[in-house]
Length: 317
Image (cartoon, one colour):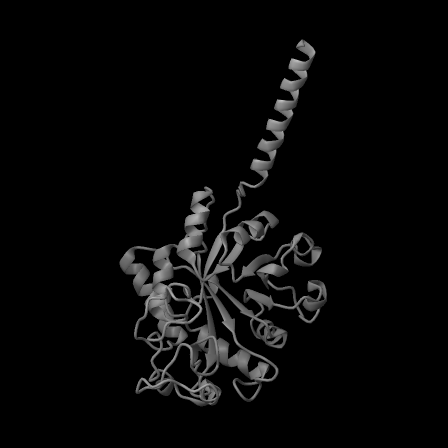
């Protein structure tokens, strides 16, 4: 009987240890600080790529403001995901809706900054983001965003966050929605370098041609290669004439083999767009510590709940 008792006790200890090991393996503890990027500001909470969205993201506590830029006809960098007037988020100056085909004709590359900013955005709630707070605003210039962020941080006694700027560029868009890469790179840098934010800014693009041009003109720029393709990352990176500062992949493309590939050694590894807590912790477990999300308030709460440290605004300076 004693033998059976001790055997039972031994099995209980083993089972308990196994349970504890399993529990510990899913606690998602990481000593590495997490960089949380507010996607287009905080698209799940406020109208995307607007000054109110960026200021809300700062107040939430993001590490980085992620945004997109396109070029206007008068050479301004306009903060916009599309180089046209997206009917889901923009209306005509008189408040009337923009037509499905008409949106593509309203080409920002053919419009002046004044014309672009006469189109209200923020009055429509994005159908995919029903919790957005509606505001009446317009597409800002990059200069306006930087000025507003600096002013807000000064008033709130907060350091300025990172910026992560995506330049929208495609082969089919050459000469239609933007210049060719060589001209585009110079036009971007002409404005960008006047803002004095290069020490805490990354520049990203899906267009390897544009990244190569940017590197040729400004080798010290922190350039990030964006991809949503399933082809091997190593093959994709061979299209670049340099080793990028970082790689940013659609979240599902990050697996153990990709995250630990020699091709990304020493690079910042970024995942987008992560709106699910379980997916965020999966990525962190893989060693992907740079997370882009539409819902920074929710994700920050989840990270804090696990006791994980988040890169604070301004720690880059």
